[in-house]
Image 1: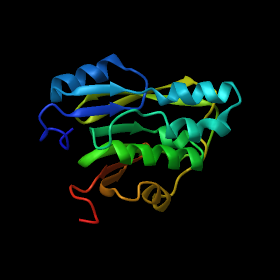
Image 2: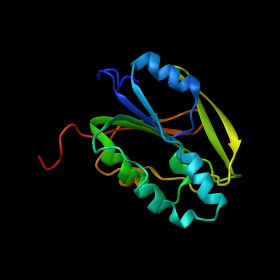
Image 3: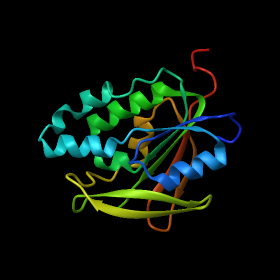
Length: 182
């Protein structure tokens, strides 16, 4: 939240399902434009139809946003449900559309994969999240090591990283304000 308050009318991309209270929260706090792209539903559809091998290609063409057009991205725990090639394809697209100076928030589990459930996060206030699990066609795939997460988002820098009491790693990435080649 604090990373986006410096922007006038920031653009926020939420990769989870539409949660009305979250949309209201960010609208009230930031006065931002909120784009919701429910990738959990896309993943579920691919898993149910037996087409997970096509998911990386689907992700590579999923976002029609212009390069550098989004100020912030909420990934929630989506990467926990993806195989490596899907995660790499998604990370590449997110880094493409994230503006220089923009931020990306990801939550990464530390528990072993389990039954097919997905997590829906609800923002309670500036400091608290609540979550619910829902049945899904695909559960968490693997625990990602920090080095693998950082490699996946090569080009972004880790601005903050916390291990929460529930053993979820919260990582905030920032895209450098200027291109490395400059």
